[in-house]
Length: 107
Length: 118
Image 1: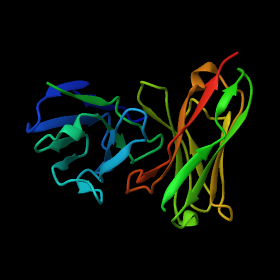
Image 2: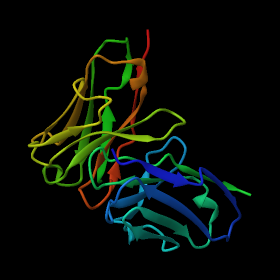
Image 3: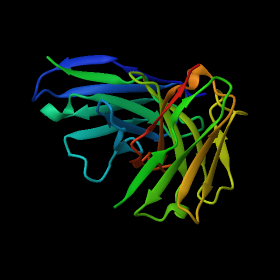
Image 4: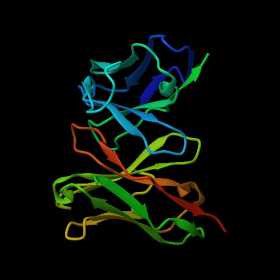
């Protein structure tokens, strides 16, 4: 199975900050990497697919990059509604594994 | 409205069976791959299974292989997950999701809680 390792597991930041979350795959997954945001008690919401494509309706402050094994999710200027949990997921091969999550907290 | 609505969760004893369903509306269900993803409350997301648009292929996580069966009825726009030989570690919220191989999981249901306990 492809192991997905996210870092950091938690991150404290302030409104207006630029933050980056990283995700590393245990083998090359080309660009088959997706990012989700999840609010407590709610289903995840797709932010970025295919490593760098912004899902329709997602604010442009979210961006993704990377290929192969190393990927990043960047939020250019944090807004109050962004302090949630983020997951990466590989869509290259089954099982479609997720990272363990990054909880973004207000400093 | 484009949506997925799960149902069928509940309390079941270890070793028991349960079938959860996912009703799709607002899009062409028969054109889409579908998935089940589960999440223990407070923990991370775990992919469980997926099925091709025409039902011709299925895949499972090792942890459920041989116990769970995914299926779909395209005439009823409904996805199913038959869960047999349930264990305490299967306790989770089960989400259905729509997504192809290159698009990510673009649409999710609200989830249904399955609790395996005596």
